[in-house]
Length: 221
Image 1 (spheres, rainbow, N blue to C red):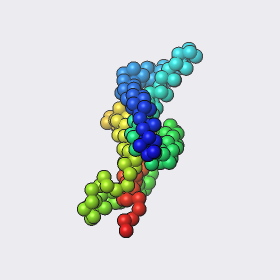
Image 2 (tube, one colour):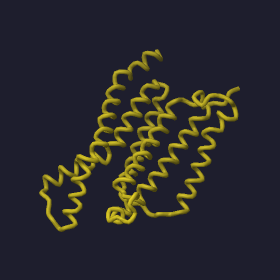
Image 3 (cartoon, rainbow, N blue to C red):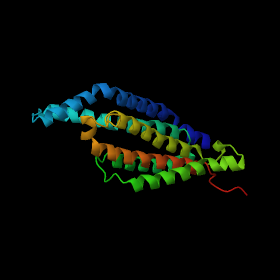
Image 4 (cartoon, rainbow, N blue to C red):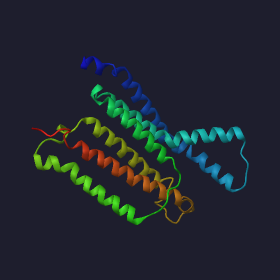
């Protein structure tokens, strides 16, 4: 029965995998297909120009899809990997989907309060603690890391590490943090603050999930 239940998810895994790869490809290609048009639109709007309604809707749809394509693509890949864990992780998958959707909704907020140095320092301490916890069990017990809690926790952790990785790329390109004196960097100050705050939260979540994954679900007797 368990094998049969696990096999029911097998046909859908390649679909989720293909969809995820397609979205990730669009996320990368959008740097040349979408981003230049978005910048031209901002420059045109700043100059007081008008945009045709149809062009505005089409451009907005492409831009929104591009902004979300990496996150949705990473979710599809993570979902395909979680489907491979079988029926034992069904409840976990539901909570993961809910948590991922909630975080993507928060990620779409364009501006957040801050920057607050104390917040980043506190999250940094939390992350350092989680890093120690993530490796402490294997180091102290001598048991392999992979023999701990189910692999689905590590998949969820990898999902948030992926989002953090993409946000770092965005800060360096769209955010302009590599050119602090440029006009683009000054214009995107609110974006840089918001994305940096989201980035460190993603890293904290990812390390937290990895720390949980390092410990067994039930203590051995």
